[in-house]
Image 1 (cartoon, rainbow, N blue to C red):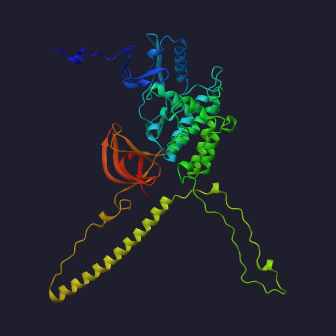
Image 2 (cartoon, rainbow, N blue to C red; image 1 turned 90 degrees about the vertical axis):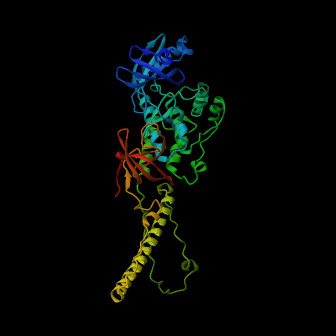
Image 3 (cartoon, rainbow, N blue to C red; image 1 turned 120 degrees about the vertical axis):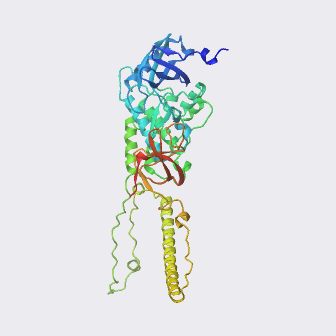
Length: 465
């Protein structure tokens, strides 16, 4: 009897080095394969010119040019190129291996996450725009900006790629959502056009919605000529941040000259906004008002205007200087104080009752030699709400990019629940558990008013003060 596995064809091997395994999908020019570099024993991605494009000389040359320019650019948010060549008339490129979920699949993010991810993409685009040449006057080409082309590959880290997860027929519509208005009018690409796409990307990550909806790439691209960015308050009520609104409006302006000039300037604006988010709220300086102790006795009748002076009008403080108040935090603080007060009162009442009972027991025992039964009390800590301190060890997130909460203590075969911002207190509820050479703790945290429980790396936690 023949062994089926013995007759199965072996995975192809290129140049005695690259063992080609699974086809992951197609993008505009290439079919992307999961591959093993047997010489260095590491997983890589093989980008091979699609079969249906073989024989089309201009696309063959375009693939080779993109492989060469990809090797020249370097940024943590771009794929690193390891090798390139040609096999059977089909050019190929070997890059680092990445996997993860696209930002399109994650929906609306926290403001911190949206700024963090957009800043990395803006840095990658700026790195390409900085490499000018006669052939590329506005900088080296970069992968198309789209939430479908951005993968979350690690805690707080993303990669901008020429994605292969979408069907080829859906790619034009996907990219049309970020197409600058002047491009729909036939103007050539520009640095400001990339800024327009970055602004729409940031808006989408914050709101979870794209500016324009439609089923046809042409109609969506044409809609950018007449559509303006709606205020964030219309999509996310109670989300008031004038500095962010101004950044979004400027980066998505209809006229290119009114936008940030390039991705580097857009990134600088994001950095300024990020610093403003971390600034502490200052008490408003109000000049003291001195009132006379008593009105002087008039020597002659006073006029009506003198008896009723006009109030002095003072310009209100600039609304942009006021930091938004987190009402959720205030409600939690007030509730915590109230419960703490009742808890202290309960302890005092129990202490008085126990003292009285102990005194009475002593007297009865001394006078009548009768031992009264001693009461037993339940563990009151078990009746406390989960967020009241004392139910477990309180730790603080110590990671500038935030910390992933996962559903299982593992780096693989696990899903990310959410990201806890830096400085957020969490409560240990389980662990430690060691998996994938990482010490995991099960914690409880409050993120955007929602309580979550999951597993995090102990490495990025420190003892709470």
